[in-house]
Image: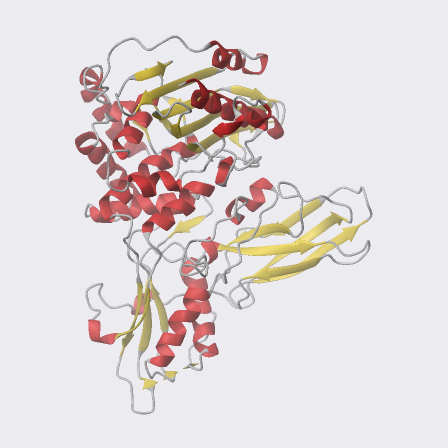
Length: 562
């Protein structure tokens, strides 16, 4: 089957794209899984209670048995965090497709490794001397640190700006709600610091050093690197005008690195909507006059999906982040009064970079402090930010002395086995975000969650999860509130969503919809749980909404009955 991107339908599940499996990793993990299989039944995930779990409650079984789930497989494991007892455990040996629930591992492991207050700071160095007149006779180099937001999501109070309908999935979901901070704020701040250091003119080049880790092919869209501008997308905000006229289209960031041409026409009421971006993945970034065009038709009475409000949002991928960042930085330097002689639009000249260890402290002329990783974790988990999760795994790899995705995955395998007691026989991961046919047993997921609950960073970890009926990917999961006995569960379930859909002309298949996290129950218990269903036939993508709502009702039932 061909993978299909689907709308978030109020839950922000990120629809995982099928990709070519990393054969070397699969072979390696298969060997590890085989060698550990003999131990899995005894040490597996270090279950603290081997007694049989109670029968599945009738109210939950009734949802499992709905006609819509005929032929599907449900799994549910619920663990009392105080006693370690498994209260419910169905399909304990099955590896389920879990999609973005995989992020609970990659984010949790990095949070434990570096601590919630750690920041990824971005320095700028000069290479060359500065004359008394303020002329830098040489190059200016921005060294990418893996800072996910580069100051572009910082609220006035220092927290991270998050929208329940995030622009990272605008094209898949059909809309988004843009955050308010200036996405180029960090680059502007760095440029002002450069000017404040006394530099008035730069005779050399402007270079982005993006060698922190090796590029990673992100879902065949672009090569992920440690430099970011606006989450590596350009946002288009669209409003209808009157039939026969062009729609109103604005875009941000506004830069010579990539412009947007408007050929989208407002059409009569009730006509067919058809919005195209050409290209959606532009390969020209770093070349002059790089342009993407939005075109075709927007009915005057069109109702924006998801938010129900204008503007309608679409995005164009920044496929060459270093080239784009270089142009933006030059533009901000010029705005700060620094004369730059090199062309603003050009390929990032990495061939001019010095060795990685050549940067002397005294040559640093600017520094952008990143947000605490606890805030990055909220960003990744609340809206299921795939790029952020993949970057987190790569950053974790750096703490283990490796600089690429394949090696980071192997380092994670060792870490989960040695420091968390989770056998590689219980999962299969292909990246940090849940791409490909990511699988795990419920025991692996709940064991990780239970372990995290005992770690110093747990308050920040739990706070990063979406909250049932309140925010993030669970903001619109509210059907359970129609039952007065379940309604108080709102705000008491912290859980990560994960979705994996495939499809072709014959129909769609929800290969995996998962929900995993923590519940503070009505009686005062603290629970960790994973709830997942695999292989649900769908008539259309909106059918997924009911699956999300059913999982919300089940989690609210767990709150009420435990």
